[in-house]
Length: 275
Image 1 (tube, one colour):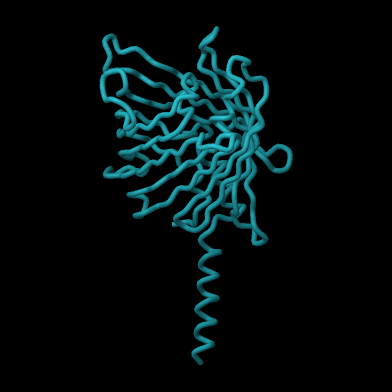
Image 2 (tube, one colour):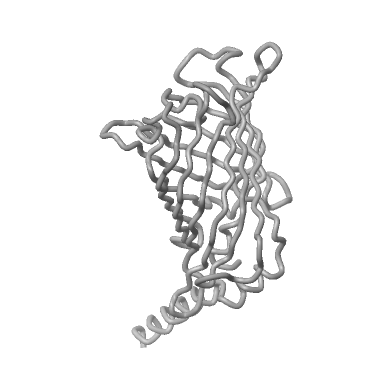
């Protein structure tokens, strides 16, 4: 009797797990019904101070980011994939200095194909994408920093609270003035996001490793807290430690903590179990 109850309980848990995942039909409905113009990466404005150097008007700053995504067609193309374009702009603003100059602005447009991966039960397993990517700081001469790449990314939900994304890129046509760029940036990034308290508190960590056998690379930690009634607006604490936070100073180590306001992306939320 006890064994039968345990077996029945396991079967019910398995059924509930499958029932909570989006089906292929539900995902197709989301694509057709939702807006084609959405947030891509987080949109934020945060300010902070360094932890590895003196704190003054030259080292404290504001960082903000604008990022959006346009689904070009609601109809799938080859291999049941969808074409989209993105644009992300990240700025470092020395607002505490006299005349408040911008230290650096990085531009990142891309165009890509995304394909939802389903399991044998026709329920969401992950999201795979391939992107043609461009990164630049819009400068010329010795201050120019730019690189192009073909990026491959896969995202999946490890469980109902945890998302994992892995991205690799193959660079090409990058400036001769910074041939060692990838010794600091590397060729891959891994991001883990964990809901700590019903999406009111979220921890996210992104890690990159440079190409050499040393400590070059970066770790970016973010803690999101939502005290608002809206679902996608948060207060954010960020700690960046490593290289290449900005393109202009890619070879300089930075450790800086910032806090501010963010409109958080939800483009991967459909990978989680349905609420």
